[in-house]
Length: 447
Ligand SMILES: Cc1ncc(COP(=O)(O)O)c(C=O)c1O
Image (cartoon, rainbow, N blue to C red; front, side):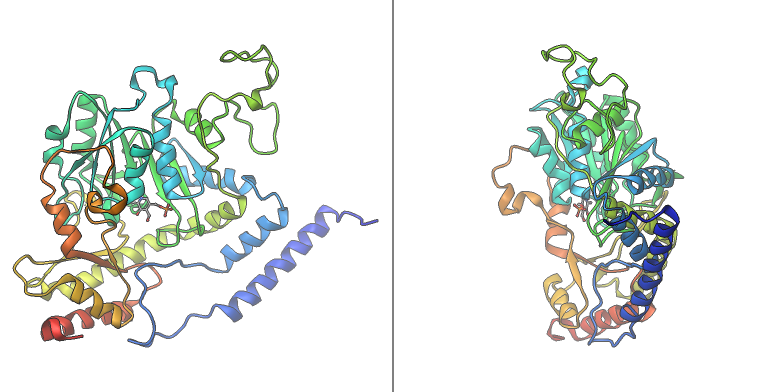
């Protein structure tokens, strides 16, 4: 019969796995030299090191698999990093947005609960899953135009977008550039609206000294590889307003009323002592549902990578800032043709990508430039769905348009972005710049 290893034997075996991980990582993931034009310059990517691999192995050796010790650690550390009251780990940034908005539909919020038919102000130049939870919850998105070259909501249009049905604002800090948080927050306070802050692209940014992710009542992060730190797949909801943590936990964990961690029973010490809804007295609290919820949890392996990634997050953010500043400097002389990105006044962005617009009176075409860069293996991305209302999946959604979407259409037709993520070095950025310069000097026939 197999004998279970003692704790010290287990520790020894774990450290042997860690040593092997070091060897494996060193031999299989060396830093490669960059060959311009031959090697890709991706628009985004992940930066992993041996500590991430070691944590991943350590978590998998537990064979716990569901949310566990690493999840608890990560949720505490991430909330501390952001400065939020708490954070909840979920399986993607999209799930985080769904959870954030669904939380605000809880009947326990009484007259502040979002109800079907209520309106939520947002932008049509947003990422789809910033908008989708509004639609999925039977609410009505109200679309407002954005500002060029900040690519965030135009705050001057908020009052015009407001109606007695408006109950919330749900918007992102586009490409890591903060929206005008003071104006938006004041507008929400004045009309008693919830603010849901999609910080998926902006972890580490600040506005007027306040950390992005702490401005909304509830905010969200993504840990997909393109983002400031990664778990492969993953996301978080950050809670800043009292009372929302318990509701969000319920919606994340099947809608249940019980708050036991996976594998635990009777945390409330009253498991068979409750009477809720029309259930019989003493019905198992573990199977009592106070919300129509989801299961949006992540695994402990994802959390384990999060725990090692968060250590590097300040370094990643700094590298993004430096890369963004360097590319901006390299492209300063292109402004006859190109609209370069600008930080929202009063903010310190945490850049996600480098936005480039085509000047309205330039003869060059965005799509020609994009194709030229792609032909040189320089990755490009459009600003998400452009005008989401023009997307095939959104033709029949219930919505209201609060202003002309002129700049939104401009974004759809004339804007794209390239990478500045920490895996790119000066040589990559110089190649992006020299390629753009070459295209501009030859005009549209450069390809
Ligand atoms: C602003 C914004 N919100 C939400 C998401 C969704 O995150 P995820 O890919 O983790 O679902 C993204 C994805 O890039 C995003 O850019």
